[in-house]
Amino acid sequence: MKKRVLLLFLTAAVTGISVTGCKQNVGTPEDNAVVEEEGGEESEAETEPGRLLGYSSADMSDPFYETLKESIRTSLEEQGDRIMVKDAENSADTQIAQISEMIDAGVDAVFLCPADWEKITPALEELDEADIPVINLGTMVKETEYIDAFIGADNRNAGYVCGEDLVEQRPDGGRIVIVEKPSVNSLNERITGFEEAIYNDGFEVAARIDASSGKEAVQASLKEVLDQDTHIDAVMCGNDQMAVQVLTVLEEIQYEDILVYSVDGSPEIKSAIADLESPMQAVGALSPINIGKRAAETAVVLLDGGAYEEEVYEETFLIDQKNVDMYGTDGWQ
Image 1 (cartoon, rainbow, N blue to C red):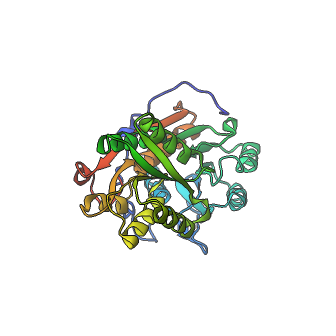
Image 2: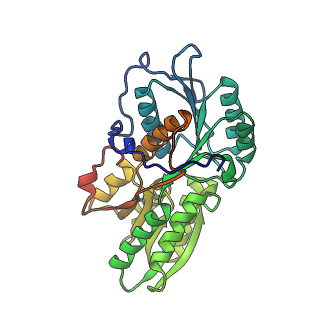
């Protein structure tokens, strides 16, 4: 990382502003420091007071990134600062171009959720040349010397707790399907943790489905697998969006006695867990709210020249039918 400073735990992350849901009401459009632009992007009015920070999202159609944005925005606005939001729509080329626009707009720092952990390097080089700090969120970039801080979740543990539960539910082992996206490092960590948890417990990976080709391809591939193999015991998904596609297929073909796991903890998936008729067994839960709070606090301290933690991994944990009511189904944890 570019800047080395003494580590200092940020107590403000504990006492910071509370964000209670995926779309917290932070005022009317006239009250807020962001405005929607064509294409789903948000930008700042140059005459607004306070510092301007950029939020470069990999894919705003993913509720995780939307909730993360709201958490960051709420915290920054309490400090009197503003946010510029750009949606890369899973394109590294788009993200690179959008970051150039942020630099031209005079942002003071950038929160970066990379669409591709390796292809984003040219944008990091440009930010470095412009002397603009980078707070990397979610998926760590390959060239970490260009970032000032990384804040994410313990993805390996999120997958691991799913695997532990599967071993408990199926002590004799079984056949599983893994839905993954090898190009995304954070998702790879989740799948690795899951496989570590079930290692040597009698489980066989019957098929791996690459979700890179889109939801229709995932559904078609899963239907083909289940049509050929009537003894699949479980499906492990790299994130909740994949799990939604799996649940859609299972409902359509009425495949019985199967357990579905994923990592994220979105309201939709928690609602499925709460439904006793659903095959959704559990989720390795993340908290975009806590990640966003910590990201905003880190940015403020960094820009003020203070000491901060260069790497932070927020806690992950299992949500299943036993505790889903405690976390609720109407928002993120």
